[in-house]
Length: 202
Image 1 (tube, rainbow, N blue to C red):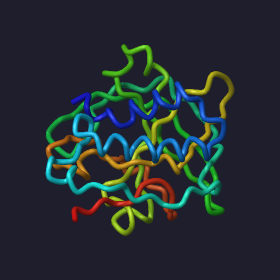
Image 2 (cartoon, rainbow, N blue to C red):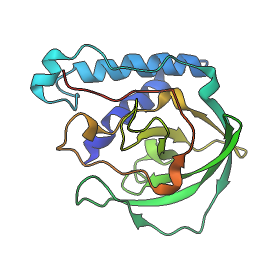
Image 3 (cartoon, rainbow, N blue to C red):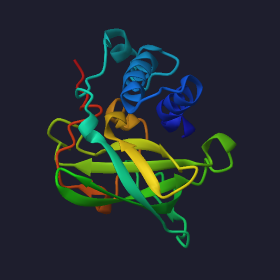
Image 4 (cartoon, one colour):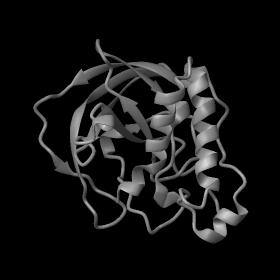
């Protein structure tokens, strides 16, 4: 099921190759590349009939308010576990640490994970997976939550979380896919009006 990571893989590699200078540049490139992936029948998660009708995905306006500096707290003694998904598939993950940050005047904490199947790939040995839900879930965004791809910082304990880069699981677009379900502790009790919105078939 490595195709589940196709979108994040393409975006992650695009960032590495084009080196956008600002977080806003990253968000612009993110939206452009995501739309490009969805239009391409060879990479799109959409069913064939939906690809023909596809125009573009719906995003919140890019906002610096949702570019957050978080404190990274590493948790090196964690044990691997089976991540719950939308199907019977249970991939192995491990908690890498916690990100603590302030948003909308409140302190929040979320867990960060690593997919054990990706750690053997040198390009992804520093990849972190942040699945989350918030007060927009089930309202303007997908009720099952969204994802953000992060990278372990080269040094220090600071981590930038750009919620403008939040994207939907593949199962939003096609139920044949199996997608990790954000754990309860990654519920953020505020509206995160950034990143991608819910998808509706026309």
